[in-house]
Length: 132
Image 1 (cartoon, rainbow, N blue to C red):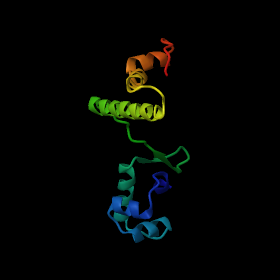
Image 2 (image 1 turned 45 degrees about the horizontal axis):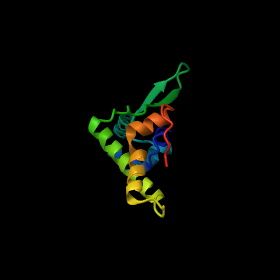
Image 3 (image 1 turned 60 degrees about the vertical axis):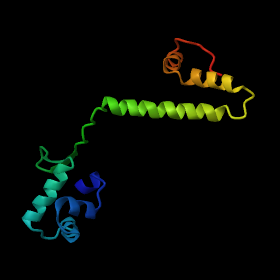
Image 4 (image 1 turned 180 degrees about the vertical axis):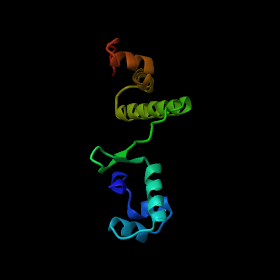
Protein backbone atom coordinates (compact mmCIF):
# COMPACT_ATOMS: atom_id res chain seq x y z
CA UNK A 1 0.00 0.00 0.00
CA UNK A 2 2.83 2.39 0.80
CA UNK A 3 4.44 1.82 -2.59
CA UNK A 4 1.11 2.39 -4.33
CA UNK A 5 0.52 5.59 -2.35
CA UNK A 6 3.77 6.93 -3.76
CA UNK A 7 2.90 5.68 -7.25
CA UNK A 8 6.17 3.75 -7.32
CA UNK A 9 6.88 0.61 -9.28
CA UNK A 10 8.61 -2.32 -7.62
CA UNK A 11 11.77 -1.21 -9.44
CA UNK A 12 11.40 2.30 -7.95
CA UNK A 13 11.15 0.90 -4.44
CA UNK A 14 13.99 -1.54 -5.00
CA UNK A 15 16.24 1.27 -6.23
CA UNK A 16 15.33 3.55 -3.32
CA UNK A 17 15.94 0.76 -0.79
CA UNK A 18 19.03 -0.59 -2.56
CA UNK A 19 17.61 -4.10 -2.72
CA UNK A 20 16.68 -6.35 -5.62
CA UNK A 21 13.32 -6.23 -7.35
CA UNK A 22 12.84 -9.89 -6.41
CA UNK A 23 13.20 -8.91 -2.75
CA UNK A 24 10.36 -6.39 -3.12
CA UNK A 25 8.21 -8.92 -5.00
CA UNK A 26 8.77 -11.62 -2.38
CA UNK A 27 8.01 -9.23 0.47
CA UNK A 28 4.80 -7.99 -1.19
CA UNK A 29 3.74 -11.59 -1.83
CA UNK A 30 4.04 -12.27 1.89
CA UNK A 31 7.04 -14.54 1.56
CA UNK A 32 9.88 -14.56 4.06
CA UNK A 33 12.29 -11.67 3.78
CA UNK A 34 15.37 -10.78 5.73
CA UNK A 35 14.75 -8.24 8.47
CA UNK A 36 17.61 -6.12 7.09
CA UNK A 37 15.80 -5.97 3.72
CA UNK A 38 12.48 -5.14 5.38
CA UNK A 39 14.18 -2.34 7.31
CA UNK A 40 15.70 -0.98 4.09
CA UNK A 41 12.26 -0.97 2.45
CA UNK A 42 10.76 0.80 5.46
CA UNK A 43 13.48 3.46 5.54
CA UNK A 44 13.14 4.11 1.79
CA UNK A 45 9.38 4.55 2.10
CA UNK A 46 9.73 6.79 5.15
CA UNK A 47 12.30 8.92 3.34
CA UNK A 48 9.72 9.44 0.61
CA UNK A 49 7.13 10.67 3.12
CA UNK A 50 5.29 7.54 4.25
CA UNK A 51 4.52 7.25 7.96
CA UNK A 52 3.64 3.91 9.50
CA UNK A 53 1.18 4.39 12.38
CA UNK A 54 -0.53 1.93 14.70
CA UNK A 55 -4.13 3.01 15.24
CA UNK A 56 -6.14 2.60 18.47
CA UNK A 57 -7.04 -0.99 17.53
CA UNK A 58 -3.40 -1.91 17.01
CA UNK A 59 -3.80 -2.09 13.24
CA UNK A 60 -1.27 -0.55 10.89
CA UNK A 61 -2.21 2.64 9.12
CA UNK A 62 -0.31 4.52 6.45
CA UNK A 63 -0.02 8.26 6.22
CA UNK A 64 1.62 10.04 3.30
CA UNK A 65 3.25 13.37 4.02
CA UNK A 66 3.44 15.56 0.98
CA UNK A 67 6.72 17.42 0.63
CA UNK A 68 6.61 21.02 1.82
CA UNK A 69 6.29 23.47 -1.02
CA UNK A 70 9.27 25.74 -1.08
CA UNK A 71 8.65 29.41 -1.73
CA UNK A 72 9.88 30.60 -5.09
CA UNK A 73 12.88 32.85 -5.02
CA UNK A 74 12.56 36.39 -6.30
CA UNK A 75 14.68 35.44 -9.31
CA UNK A 76 12.35 32.54 -10.13
CA UNK A 77 9.31 34.79 -9.82
CA UNK A 78 10.91 37.42 -12.07
CA UNK A 79 11.83 34.78 -14.65
CA UNK A 80 8.27 33.46 -14.54
CA UNK A 81 6.85 36.98 -14.95
CA UNK A 82 9.19 37.62 -17.89
CA UNK A 83 7.98 34.41 -19.53
CA UNK A 84 4.33 35.42 -19.08
CA UNK A 85 5.03 38.90 -20.50
CA UNK A 86 6.76 37.36 -23.51
CA UNK A 87 3.89 34.93 -24.10
CA UNK A 88 1.34 37.75 -23.80
CA UNK A 89 3.24 39.89 -26.30
CA UNK A 90 3.46 36.98 -28.75
CA UNK A 91 -0.27 36.31 -28.37
CA UNK A 92 -1.10 39.97 -29.06
CA UNK A 93 1.18 39.98 -32.12
CA UNK A 94 -0.52 36.84 -33.43
CA UNK A 95 -3.98 38.27 -32.80
CA UNK A 96 -3.10 41.42 -34.75
CA UNK A 97 -1.89 39.54 -37.82
CA UNK A 98 -4.06 40.47 -40.77
CA UNK A 99 -5.34 43.59 -39.01
CA UNK A 100 -5.72 46.77 -41.05
CA UNK A 101 -3.91 48.66 -38.30
CA UNK A 102 -0.63 50.38 -39.05
CA UNK A 103 2.57 49.17 -37.40
CA UNK A 104 2.34 52.13 -35.02
CA UNK A 105 -1.27 51.27 -34.08
CA UNK A 106 -0.30 47.61 -33.55
CA UNK A 107 2.58 48.64 -31.30
CA UNK A 108 0.23 50.89 -29.31
CA UNK A 109 -2.31 48.07 -28.90
CA UNK A 110 0.43 45.66 -27.92
CA UNK A 111 1.69 48.10 -25.31
CA UNK A 112 -1.82 48.62 -23.91
CA UNK A 113 -2.48 44.90 -23.68
CA UNK A 114 0.83 44.00 -22.08
CA UNK A 115 1.20 46.97 -19.70
CA UNK A 116 1.01 45.19 -16.34
CA UNK A 117 -0.39 48.00 -14.14
CA UNK A 118 -3.09 48.82 -16.67
CA UNK A 119 -4.04 45.18 -17.28
CA UNK A 120 -4.12 44.43 -13.55
CA UNK A 121 -6.21 47.54 -12.91
CA UNK A 122 -8.73 46.54 -15.57
CA UNK A 123 -8.83 42.99 -14.21
CA UNK A 124 -9.63 44.35 -10.77
CA UNK A 125 -12.32 46.61 -12.22
CA UNK A 126 -10.46 49.83 -11.47
CA UNK A 127 -10.09 50.77 -15.09
CA UNK A 128 -12.46 50.29 -17.95
CA UNK A 129 -10.02 51.11 -20.75
CA UNK A 130 -10.70 49.78 -24.20
CA UNK A 131 -8.56 46.74 -24.96
CA UNK A 132 -8.51 46.75 -28.76
